Length: 113
Length: 116
Image (cartoon, rainbow over all chains, first blue to last red; front, side):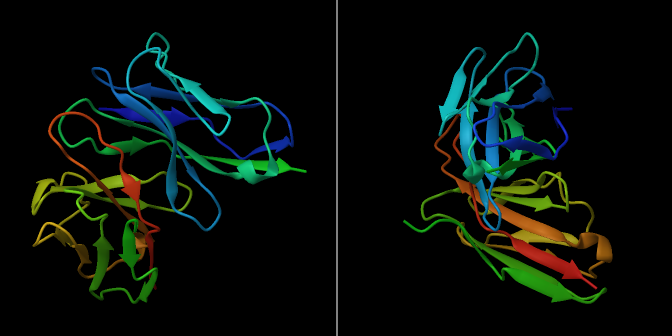
């Protein structure tokens, strides 16, 4: 069945450092891929998405490219801020049916001033 | 406009008791999803409604779990004979569903259930 694997955290970075959070997936067909973010005390928010191979999703300085050849959707940001401290979830949905999300286990990011 | 709301925000119950968790989706959203997020894990799918009917309940862990959406709007997740392992955050999400293709799911803040 479909699954998502993302790097374990926590990831601790200094402000303005470069961020990469790895995400790989297993799926039949051509799933849609997502990054969600959960700030402390808040609900899940969609950060970015890509619905087909080679698409790049971007938002708030974060980017991720849908790589079908490596089944990956790594999250990157060139310069993190303290306010980026949160838990990041990689997720996919199938191409038909219920469109239910399958999430990774989440990666906690802590950015130090 | 208003987002997805869930009540209560916190629920503490004793083992063996019955609980109901409520979800109010965004107005006009016909698709509604329930997920469960255990500590340190990502959310896991429980059940999906399209309108009033449960189109996919393959994620419900056992027959103690049941959900309804009688009028195609508000949904209630019901858990009978709760067990300590049911302790988790229960998330609700809703989306538009206008035929084929993906529509973004909007998540509520969740209900934190603690079974003592």
